[in-house]
Amino acid sequence: MKRACYGQSNGPLVTPEEFVQHATPRYKERGIQAYCRACEEPVDLYGVHSPNVTSRFDHKNLSPDVDPLDDCVLANRTNRLQGLEPDDWDEDAGVRLRKAFFRDDTIAQAYAFSLAMCRKGNLPIRTFQSMILRADRKKIWFYADIRLWVVPFILLTLENFRHPEKNGGAGYDFHFVLDKPKGTTISALWRTPNECQLKKVFSDSGTPVKANDNPFQLSEEALTEKAGDFAWVKTTGNLLRDLKACE
Image (cartoon, rainbow, N blue to C red; front, side, top):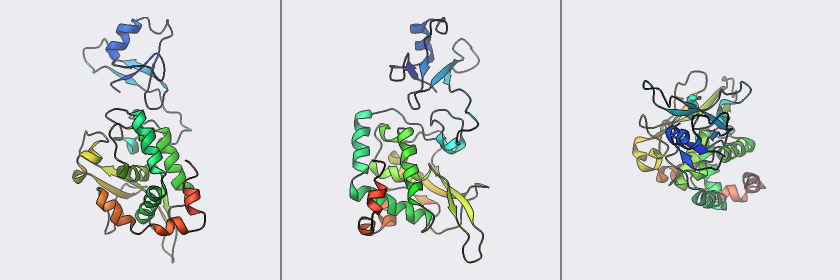
């Protein structure tokens, strides 16, 4: 991680060199720490005085009882989350984006799209809610310049899914991954969507699931077409209320 917050979780972002300049090499005995901007946890300084490595901030080891999907997007410890790091943050815009997502039509469309991608019966309401809660913890909404239409694509990568046994066929676990140009940050999803795809893969092997819409090209138009007429979401019992339970 190239930058961290100085002194407190909402402190100014600094490079490792800037951190040492302000805190001095005696920062440990002075009780001064650096914090991750995303997860707000303390991070360690690495390589500032070494000519052989690039200086950085490192997260501490992930506790074995933590689900890898609950890891920090900036920790670089979990393959599932690689490439989800933002270019920058914009909290004011993030508050507005999250509010816009919970508008009836927007969240209804997001659910209809997610259900179509997972297939009927593979997306319990509690799983959709879990996707949103993970987005909250990872501060996805605060990613600088993020587009509202991109959010459902990211949400699908934040959960594991199960296709149950049907008509004698074996069930299987699956999840979604974002395929984008190597070395790019999350902004590639809306800056060069024609170069990005959402892939549905078997969780045990990572092999793509065979389907006509897999991989799925990223675009706002593709999202709209896949979601189809989502009016039923708003008129089906308490479905819309349950989808907005995390609001």
